[in-house]
Image (cartoon, rainbow, N blue to C red; front, side, top):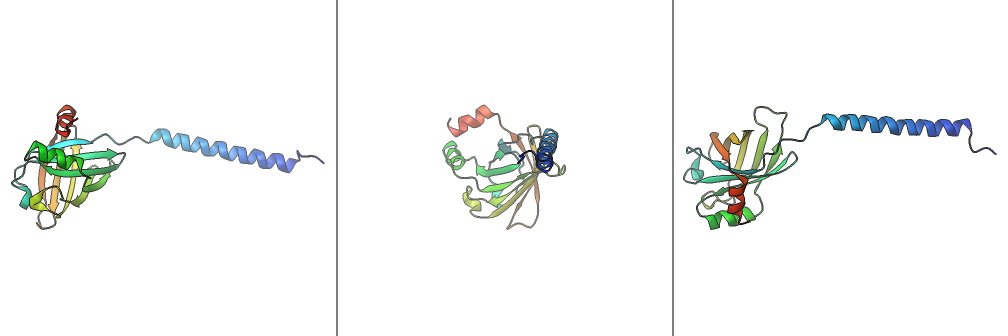
Length: 165
């Protein structure tokens, strides 16, 4: 009784060949994909004409990034203590960074739990990050128009100081 029949050798040869081809395809694909650029950080919103309850606020948009997935918080910068407390809480905005969409790759949607005057209002933020500048649009559920804004990324040392680290 022979264990090395032609059928057995052909089967094992074919199985090994398919595994090698699959490995080659996956590694070739893996070398062509690129990680999205890092956009996480704190962005101070400098625009003055924000909608409704956001108009009287000095705002900071905090973005946390894990690959293409984003979490964020829009917080008021009234006092350092309030800011530190709101940063420590769970982010209220979720979204994605779609680098293929050149017009507005950043998208965050959620509620404004961290700003008293806007409590539990839904918000949508879309924008483009170019270097340390974020240009985008904010839409509140209670206001029909979409308002443009500009935000500037703060230095990480300054952000760490605000976080109390």
